[in-house]
Amino acid sequence: MVYFDTYEECLRAVENGKADMTILNNYIAEYYLGKYQYSDLSTSLSDEYSHLYCFAAENKNEVLASVLSKGLQQISETETSQIYIKGQEERPKSNYIQTMIYQNPVQVVLAGMGVCALIFAVTFLLFYGNRRKKQNIKLSEALSAKSDFLARMSHDMRTPMNGILGLTELLQEEDMSDEVRNAISQIQISGEYLLDLINDTLDMNKIELKQLILSPAPADLEEITENIMTNGRILADQKGINFIMKKIHTENMISTYLYIDRARMEQIFMNLISNAVKFTPKGGTVTVSIERLETNKDSIVSQYVIEDTGIGMSEEFMEHLYEPFAREEQNQVQNQEGTGLGLSIVKQLVDLMNGEIKVESKEDKGTKFTLKIPLKRYLGEIKQHKIINLDDKNLEGKRILLCEDHPLNQEISVKLLEKKKIIVDVAKDGAVGVKMYVASKEGYYDAILMDLRMPNMDGYEAANKIRNLGRSDSLTIPIIAMTANAFDEDVQKCLKAGMNAHIAKPIDVKHLYETLERCLGS
Image (cartoon, rainbow, N blue to C red):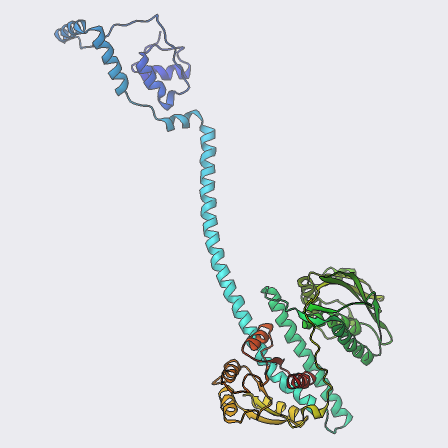
C-alpha cells in the first residue's frame, strides 16, 4: 500500500508503474481520466469497496465534526442521489483537443505539418500567381511594344528600300557601261535580300505572337502552280541548272478552283525551290513533282516533291532544320546569303494549312522535300476574268491622282507611271488629295494611288471621304493603296476602307502595272 497526497499523484503512480492500481470515487476517476495526461489509463467499477459519505475536519474542531456527522445522518437517500447527480453535471469537462493530441502525438504532428505545408503552398501559389500575372502583363506589354516597333520599322525601312529598288529599276534602262550596270545590279540584289530579311523577320514575329493567319480565297491552283514553276525555271536558268517539272494524276480535273492563300502558297514553294537552286551547283538538276493523291467532292490532297542534286545536309543539322536562324556549318552554305528563317516559316505555314512536310538529305547527294497539302474545293460560280495583255497602250493617256507625302517616293512613282505615258497629278497628303478630287470634274481621274501614312489626313480617311462624296464617279473610281504598310491586316483594312487593291512598297513594277490594268480594265 502506497499513499499519496492527491488524486493526480495516485494516477501518475499507476501510469509510471509505481503502483498497480488506485481506488477512487467513480466521478473523480472519470474527471481525471478524461484529462489528456491520463488518457492511457482505464477504469473498472468494483462492488468490493463501499464508503459512507463524510466530511473532514481538523482535530481541534471536534464540535464541527460532530455537527456535520449528525447532519449527514439526516440526509435522505433521495437527497443524496440528487447531490450525486448535481455534482456529476457540474464537474469540469475534459479538453477533447488536448486529449487527442496526447493520444495521437505522431499523427497530430504529421497533420500539423500537412496543414502548414498546405498553408505554405496556398500562400506560395497566390504569391507566384500574382507574380506571374504581373510578369504576363509586362510580357504582353513588351510583345506589344515589340510588334509595334517592328511594324513601324517595317514601314520606315520599306520607304528607303522603295527608293533604292525603284531607282535601280529606272537606272537599268539607261545607257551605261557594263561595269556600272553590274554595280547597279548588285545594289538591286542586295536590296532585294534586305527586303526578304525584313519580310522574314516580320513573319517570325507573327509566328511568335501566334498572329500568323491564312487568308484563303477562291483561286485557280493550276494557274498558281504554273506561275510558281515559271519563276522557278527562271531562277534555275540564271544559274545554269536543269529544271524539270512532273505532273502525276492531275489530268481530267473538273475544276482546279480551291480555297487558297495564294501569297502564302507561293511563299512556301518559292522558298523551297530557291533553296534547291541556291544549294545546287551549276549543271545540277532541280525536279518538282506534283501528284494528286486524293480527289473528292469537297477537297483534294496534293503531294509536292522538290528534289535537287545539290550539296545536301548533315544528319546533325537536319535535327535543327526548322529552328529559326539555323544554318548548316559548311563553307558552301556559309558563303550563300540567307537569314536562316525561311524553312522555319515554311514549316509554320504548312502546319497552318493542316499539311505535312518531310525531308530526306545526304551530304553531296542532294535534298528531297515532300509536302502533302489538303485544300478545300470552291463550289461557287467561277467568274471568268478579263484577260489583260500587258501593253503600253493599255495605260497610255490615263490620268492618275497620286497621294504621297515622301518626295523621293513621289519622284519614283511619277517616273514609273510616266514610262507607260500615264498623266500624273501629285497630292502631298490625303487632305490635299481629297480637295483635288473634289475640284475635278466627274470622270477626270481614272484611278487614285493612295499612300496610307500621311500628315494631316491618312489614306484610310481620304478614301472614305472620297467614297462618300455622293458623286457618280466617287463609288466607282479605283483607289489603290500604295504603301509601306505591308501586313495582312493592312490589306484587309484597306479593302474595308473602300479601296480596290493594295500594293506594298518597295514597288514591284510589274505588279503595279498589272494592278492598274486590272482595276482600270474592270
